[in-house]
Amino acid sequence: MAPDVVVVGHVALDVNVFPWGVVENVLGGAPTYSGLQFAALKLEVGLVSKVGIDFTEKFPPIYRKLGLDTEGIYVAGEHTTTFENTYDEQGNRTQVCKHVAPPITPADVPGSYLDAKAFYVSPIANEITPELLRFIKRESNFVMLDPQGILRVIGADGRVGVRPRDLSEFLRHVDIVKLGREEAVVLRGNVEEGMRSVQEMGPGIVIVTRGGEPTLVLSGEGFTRIDPLKVGVRDMTGAGDVFGAAFLTRYLATRDVMDAAKFATAAAGLKIRYKGPTGFPTEPEILEAVQRLG
Image (cartoon, rainbow, N blue to C red):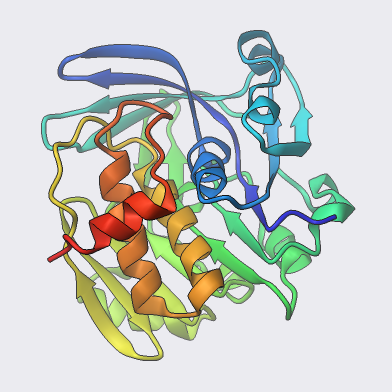
C-alpha cells in the first residue's frame, strides 16, 4: 500500500543559535518538518533519506513512533547532515555545515512508494539529482520541489551560501516549485518576471515565500499576493517545509491554488510560534487561522 505522500531529502541534526540562547541536537530537514506536518493533517507519509550512525544513537526509531513510514531511510556512514543555524532578531539565518550525508539516488526509493499521490522534495545539501526527479515523476502524481539545497554552496569553512544556478534540468520534472527568500536569488531582477521564467521551465505553480512579507504565487490564474499571519515568532526553522506540506495537502484535496496557498500561509504562521519540531497545526486550527489572513 503506497503512502499518500513521500518526503525526499536529508534529515538534519541542527544546532540552533538564537538571540535568547542555544538549542542543540534538534531534528531538522524536510523529513522532520514537512513529514510531521503531513502527519498532523492525517496523511500517510513515507520518508526517503540518508542518515549517519549518529542519528541512530541519538534518535532511535523516532519517526516510526510518530507514525511515519521509514522504509526509505538508510544509514550510510558515520554522520547525518548537520548544520549550525544562527538567527538574528529579524529571523535572518547564517548557516555553517558540519557534516553532509551521502546523496539520495533512485535506487533508494522503495518500490511501494512509487504509487504515492505526491512527492515533496526538499534537499538541504545537494543530495538530489534531476535523475531522481525524473524517476519519481508520473502522470498520475504531483511533485513539489523546494530547491534550497540545490542552490546552496558550502565553503571550505563550512559556511553556507546561495548561488544562482540553472534549474531547468530539475524543474522539467516538477509540478510545483516553492522558493524561499534566500533562494529567490535565482530570480534576479524583477521577481515577477523571474517567476514567469521559472514557470516556463516546467512547473505550473511557482511560489515565493518571503518571511514577514507577502507570499507571491504564480499559476494559470496569474499572480497573487498573500499577506502573512500576524503572530509572535519564536522559531522560523522549518517554516518553509511546513508551508510546502500544508500547500500540497490542501492542493491534493481541492485543486485550488489560492485556497491551498492561504492554507499553507496560515499553517506556517501557526507553526513559527513554537520552538523546534513541535506545534504542528491541525486542519481545524489552520482553517480558523485562514479567516484571520489579511
